[in-house]
Image (cartoon, rainbow, N blue to C red; front, side):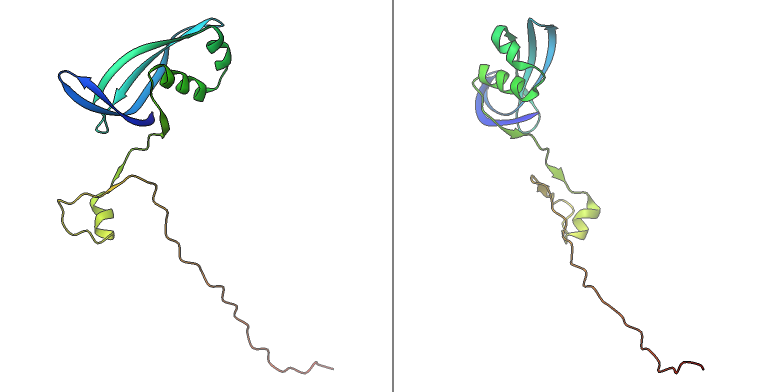
Length: 138
Protein backbone atom coordinates (compact mmCIF):
# COMPACT_ATOMS: atom_id res chain seq x y z
CA UNK A 1 0.00 0.00 0.00
CA UNK A 2 1.32 3.45 -0.93
CA UNK A 3 0.54 6.85 0.50
CA UNK A 4 -0.47 9.32 -2.19
CA UNK A 5 -0.97 13.07 -2.28
CA UNK A 6 -4.55 13.57 -1.13
CA UNK A 7 -7.01 13.75 -4.00
CA UNK A 8 -10.74 14.42 -3.97
CA UNK A 9 -12.92 11.62 -5.41
CA UNK A 10 -16.66 11.78 -6.11
CA UNK A 11 -18.14 8.69 -4.40
CA UNK A 12 -21.90 7.99 -4.36
CA UNK A 13 -22.89 11.65 -4.27
CA UNK A 14 -20.25 12.88 -1.82
CA UNK A 15 -16.70 14.09 -2.08
CA UNK A 16 -14.19 11.75 -0.42
CA UNK A 17 -10.45 12.17 0.03
CA UNK A 18 -8.25 9.35 -1.26
CA UNK A 19 -4.94 9.01 0.59
CA UNK A 20 -3.84 5.45 -0.20
CA UNK A 21 -3.28 3.41 -3.33
CA UNK A 22 -3.26 -0.38 -3.43
CA UNK A 23 -2.57 -2.33 -6.60
CA UNK A 24 -1.72 -5.86 -7.68
CA UNK A 25 -1.26 -7.78 -10.91
CA UNK A 26 -4.34 -9.68 -12.07
CA UNK A 27 -3.53 -10.94 -15.55
CA UNK A 28 -0.08 -11.24 -17.09
CA UNK A 29 0.88 -12.52 -20.51
CA UNK A 30 4.60 -13.10 -20.14
CA UNK A 31 6.66 -10.94 -22.45
CA UNK A 32 3.58 -9.04 -23.64
CA UNK A 33 1.43 -7.29 -21.01
CA UNK A 34 0.15 -7.11 -17.45
CA UNK A 35 -3.10 -5.86 -15.97
CA UNK A 36 -3.11 -4.21 -12.54
CA UNK A 37 -6.21 -3.92 -10.38
CA UNK A 38 -6.17 -0.84 -8.15
CA UNK A 39 -8.12 0.50 -5.18
CA UNK A 40 -8.07 4.00 -3.74
CA UNK A 41 -8.69 4.26 0.00
CA UNK A 42 -9.55 6.99 2.46
CA UNK A 43 -7.43 7.41 5.58
CA UNK A 44 -10.05 5.27 7.39
CA UNK A 45 -9.63 2.35 4.93
CA UNK A 46 -12.85 2.97 3.01
CA UNK A 47 -12.53 1.94 -0.66
CA UNK A 48 -13.75 4.84 -2.78
CA UNK A 49 -12.52 3.92 -6.27
CA UNK A 50 -11.46 0.76 -8.09
CA UNK A 51 -10.44 -0.16 -11.58
CA UNK A 52 -7.70 -1.64 -13.70
CA UNK A 53 -4.74 -0.41 -15.72
CA UNK A 54 -3.04 -2.29 -18.56
CA UNK A 55 0.71 -2.20 -19.07
CA UNK A 56 2.02 -3.31 -22.45
CA UNK A 57 4.61 -2.63 -25.13
CA UNK A 58 7.63 -0.55 -24.13
CA UNK A 59 6.21 0.05 -20.64
CA UNK A 60 5.98 -3.70 -20.05
CA UNK A 61 9.53 -4.23 -21.32
CA UNK A 62 10.85 -1.57 -18.89
CA UNK A 63 9.06 -3.18 -15.95
CA UNK A 64 11.38 -6.20 -15.57
CA UNK A 65 11.15 -7.16 -11.87
CA UNK A 66 11.09 -3.64 -10.44
CA UNK A 67 7.94 -3.29 -8.34
CA UNK A 68 8.53 0.46 -7.90
CA UNK A 69 8.23 0.84 -11.68
CA UNK A 70 4.83 -0.90 -11.59
CA UNK A 71 3.61 1.30 -8.70
CA UNK A 72 4.77 4.45 -10.53
CA UNK A 73 3.16 3.25 -13.78
CA UNK A 74 -0.24 2.77 -12.14
CA UNK A 75 0.00 6.08 -10.25
CA UNK A 76 0.95 7.96 -13.43
CA UNK A 77 -1.96 6.45 -15.37
CA UNK A 78 -4.30 7.61 -12.59
CA UNK A 79 -2.68 11.06 -12.26
CA UNK A 80 -1.63 10.30 -8.69
CA UNK A 81 1.58 11.18 -6.88
CA UNK A 82 3.07 8.55 -4.56
CA UNK A 83 4.67 10.15 -1.52
CA UNK A 84 5.84 6.98 0.24
CA UNK A 85 4.84 3.67 1.75
CA UNK A 86 1.67 3.77 3.83
CA UNK A 87 2.41 3.23 7.51
CA UNK A 88 -0.64 2.34 9.58
CA UNK A 89 -1.00 4.46 12.72
CA UNK A 90 -0.23 2.63 15.94
CA UNK A 91 -3.01 2.81 18.52
CA UNK A 92 -1.48 2.34 21.94
CA UNK A 93 -2.88 -0.30 24.25
CA UNK A 94 -3.95 0.37 27.82
CA UNK A 95 -0.64 -0.92 29.23
CA UNK A 96 1.29 1.41 26.95
CA UNK A 97 -0.99 4.35 27.80
CA UNK A 98 -0.53 3.83 31.54
CA UNK A 99 3.22 3.66 31.06
CA UNK A 100 3.06 6.99 29.23
CA UNK A 101 1.02 8.65 31.99
CA UNK A 102 -2.30 8.76 30.10
CA UNK A 103 -4.96 8.40 32.78
CA UNK A 104 -8.17 9.04 30.83
CA UNK A 105 -9.30 5.58 29.57
CA UNK A 106 -11.32 7.19 26.75
CA UNK A 107 -8.26 9.03 25.41
CA UNK A 108 -6.50 7.37 22.50
CA UNK A 109 -3.10 8.35 21.26
CA UNK A 110 -2.31 7.77 17.60
CA UNK A 111 1.32 7.55 16.61
CA UNK A 112 1.87 8.08 12.90
CA UNK A 113 5.65 7.90 12.88
CA UNK A 114 7.90 5.14 14.17
CA UNK A 115 8.70 5.44 17.85
CA UNK A 116 12.41 5.41 18.62
CA UNK A 117 13.22 3.70 21.92
CA UNK A 118 14.83 5.86 24.56
CA UNK A 119 18.01 4.18 25.72
CA UNK A 120 20.02 5.58 28.58
CA UNK A 121 23.77 5.20 28.08
CA UNK A 122 25.42 2.75 30.43
CA UNK A 123 28.42 4.19 32.21
CA UNK A 124 31.39 1.88 32.19
CA UNK A 125 32.61 1.18 35.70
CA UNK A 126 36.00 -0.41 36.29
CA UNK A 127 36.55 -1.95 39.69
CA UNK A 128 40.10 -2.67 40.67
CA UNK A 129 40.71 -5.03 43.55
CA UNK A 130 43.34 -3.88 46.04
CA UNK A 131 46.58 -5.82 45.81
CA UNK A 132 48.07 -6.93 49.12
CA UNK A 133 51.76 -6.53 49.74
CA UNK A 134 53.04 -10.06 49.68
CA UNK A 135 56.68 -11.00 49.85
CA UNK A 136 57.76 -13.85 47.63
CA UNK A 137 58.61 -17.06 49.39
CA UNK A 138 62.23 -18.10 49.37
